[in-house]
Image 1 (cartoon, rainbow, N blue to C red):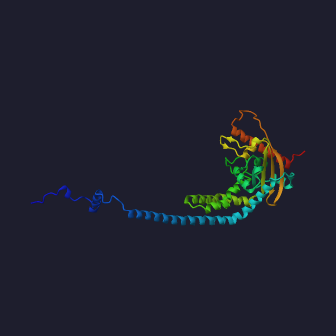
Image 2 (tube, helix red, strand yellow; image 1 turned 90 degrees about the vertical axis):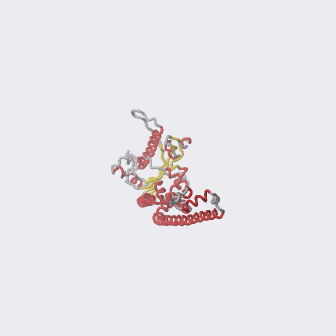
Image 3 (cartoon, rainbow, N blue to C red; image 1 turned 180 degrees about the vertical axis):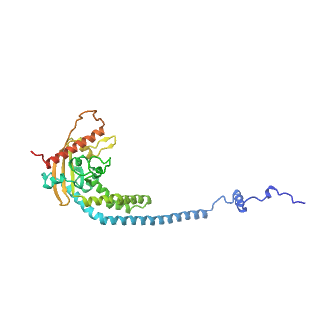
Length: 332
């Protein structure tokens, strides 16, 4: 006779028997509680993994940091060897020029310089901000080439000569001292200190990107400034005639700097030129920065920001004409 059919409980279940056995044990509550020894083993494993990660990560960061500082020292030994003495020399001249007002100086070289296609460095800050190297470096960040240099100097505009439509009407000379400070920031003790204390991979990556940009774009600019600059043009703006005009102004685009606020108002300014090749002051004048304009026809400009830009340009060009008229007086 054939064997009787198996009952449902006796039928073989698909899959591995051990899996079904484990499931039955869990349902029976045999593994419902993890022992203290098991938790301890898990905790020790996690701590060990974290320690290994910290050690490996720390060694990686230390290696990257050492490599970055090594490359920085190589740049410091070459570019820094020439830039730092030039920086100190310019800052010393600025501080000296901020002292008591001296007599006008117009050397014969100034007449040739003002009409020469010159290559130099320009800085314009307030007289009150020219008392220390730290103040000069801080306020130089807001310094920009303005209409004064465009109206004063007869220099080339290389970008415009190449036909670039957005080259502007003013030349790309002189360089602004702000550019030199920015181009050599990786040489500053502050930058080195921040790199030395960077213990996070992401933070260190930021410094690596800064160095890569400096090596690719900024250091070549610094070398060009160091090698080619033959004069230093300095403008120190004295207090505005009306003290309230010295306060920064809020505009739609943000807040104007104190320097921009002074350029809006009539005031006196000191202008200096230092011949870097001869280490000789060839020009020292104190003149008024005050101009005016009228709308000859058409609809007058009413936008406040545009009017401010026009006022700055007129005042700066008026100062430039005062300087040119003193250096190159018109024939009788």
